[in-house]
Amino acid sequence: MSNFWQRTITGLFFVVAIVIGLWWHPLAYMAIFALVVLLGMYEFIRMLRGLDVKIRWFWAFLIGLFLYVGSFFFFYAQVPARWLVVIVPMVGGVFLSELYFRNKNSLLNIATTLITPLYVALPLAFLHHLAFYGGEYGYHLLMGFFLMVWANDSGAYVIGSLLGRHKLFPSVSPAKSWEGAVGGFVFTIVAGYFSYYVFGILKLIDWIVISSLIAVLGTYGDLIESMLKRSVNIKDSGNVFPGHGGVLDRFDGVFFSAPAVSCYLLFC
Image (cartoon, rainbow, N blue to C red):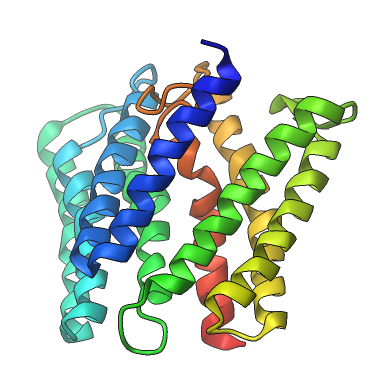
């Protein structure tokens, strides 16, 4: 099977799973992305296994799940925000436990343990703001968000494959081109227009701003993921999605665009 068809079939299954989860029930949405958080952190830890560091799995997964699940119930069940401060002793636990392991690279161990949930779980927790925008759960804004993310990825891949000539960032990702980036931007803007007419909720200008944020920051997220993989000499973060790589490869555009979109909706 060619890489194109492999990517297409895998992508369709991926899209269907996400759409069903968003549409079915808020707990289904939470469960699907909790799995994404766990798999993403697992892949991130595996990426670093070639380095001379010891990531404390227990603390990384505990902090990551607490960030994601705890913030979900803040919106879903109106759990008081004060409970989120429990994250503070968890972070302290990372430092305290390192005392007893007596490892020579304690500083790097602590840093990589903490960056794992911050890179993977925290950005995905910002999706809850989109899911509960307006006070109650609704899949429309999230669906529009992911539609634009997928449009950016698809546009960049298709246009880059057909017309790509000028390298976008060759030192990090030789395959990516300016033509692909522009194609992704245009596809994302079109998806923003489509989302406005199908989902409504926001003004047209808001959808256009959000689509622009996703196109730009989604591309940067892809480049940063490539930079991280190149720094540890791997091609894909995993193989969960044939033709697409791992969870981190599939969601790299979300890690930087979700917080930005959430902040835009919060302050603008």
